[in-house]
Length: 180
Image 1 (tube, rainbow, N blue to C red):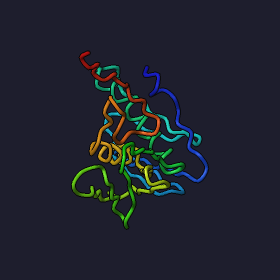
Image 2 (image 1 turned 30 degrees about the horizontal axis):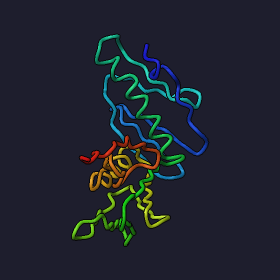
Image 3 (image 1 turned 60 degrees about the horizontal axis):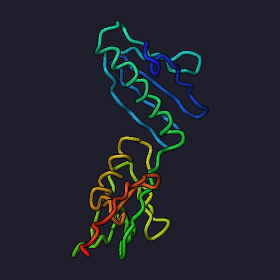
């Protein structure tokens, strides 16, 4: 039995979960609504304000999907009740970011400003000129939007310049030692 898959998911107050006969899970909460089609072989049931995920057999595919489906449903419930956010820091001289409408405009040392359009379900905020907060209810969208921003200037190991996640630790390298 999957250690993740066998755990029941508690449904918090204000959140409703529906599963139709095609295994499409709909989760509604105070922050919005998420709909996702799950694999048809995995059984998802609602019992006593809990979501229970079970698998029909012990074959390799079903074992792999069991924990995955449970984690996806749990992420949907957390997303509509609390939401997700990722914080990015811009480290470098002259690196700055600002939000113009739905676009994030960043100066990253290129000859032109970098403009990133916010996808549906994701919002950008800049509490400081060198800090970008990506937030939304879908964990996958928030993570991919943050990764798209980060890829414009990945942190380099010598001075640590670039765009890094707030909790990310950059392994630093020592520079060359010159000839004497």
